Image 1 (cartoon, helix red, strand yellow):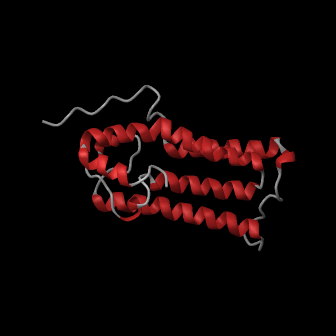
Image 2 (spheres, helix red, strand yellow):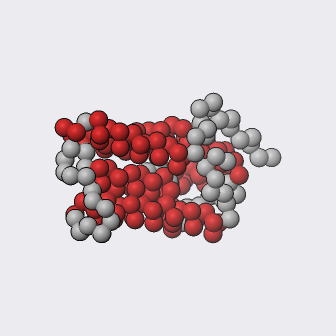
Image 3 (tube, one colour):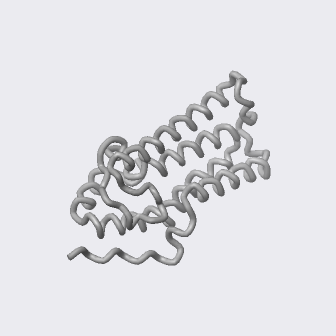
Length: 168
C-alpha cells in the first residue's frame, strides 16, 4: 500500500510561482526607482535599440524562457502535471533532459528571466529580487513539492536528489 502523501504547511502552495516572480519583478522595479544612487548603468532601451544592456537583458530573458519551456515540455512528454499547485498529481518522476542539470528548470528559468529584468533596470538594488525569489520559491513551493515526490517515489527520488542539485 502506498504511503500517504505529506500534508502541506499552511503557507505552502498558496501563491502560484509566476505570481511570486511577478511580485519580485515589481519590487525590483520599485527598488530601482527608489534608490537612484544604486544605478549602475542607464535603464535598458526599447527593443530595436542596439545597446549591450538591451541585448544582454533580452538574451537572459530568452535563455530563461527556453529553460522553463524545456521543463514544461519534459513534463508533458512524461504525461505528468505541470501544475505547481498540485504536486500530489505527479504521475512520473522526470529525470531526463534538462532535469539532468537542475531539479527545477521551470523555476530556474523564471529566475534567469528576472536576471534579465535586473540587467534591464541597471540598478544594484534590483538584484535583491533574485535571492528573494529563490528564497520564496524554495520555502513556499519547492520544499513541499520535494516532500510529495519523496513520499510518492521514495528511493528513486532520493537517488535523483543526491545527483542533481535543486537549482544548479
